[in-house]
Image (cartoon, rainbow, N blue to C red; front, side, top):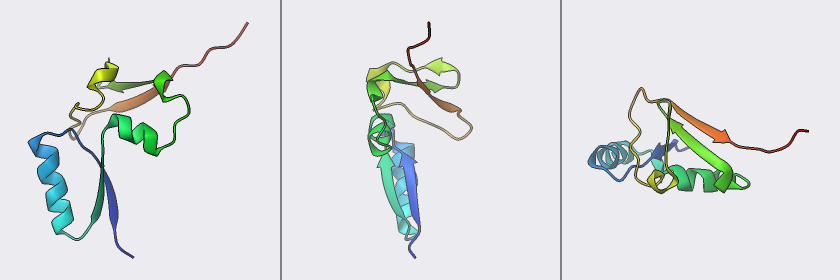
Length: 84
């Protein structure tokens, strides 16, 4: 069975080179940014999902170009209404 990997792609040189190195090792890579990751996970109502990176909320326009580095903490927050 061929190995597969998913990479968060920022579009910068570091993530591009990392993916190239992984591909050279014969590993299939699917490169994602936060927007495509939410699509791939089939998140219902993705407009209600917020991304927190290292304790800071990302603006939605930054989802496609934000770099994630080793040691970063990423959280996905899904806001829901309800209650009395």
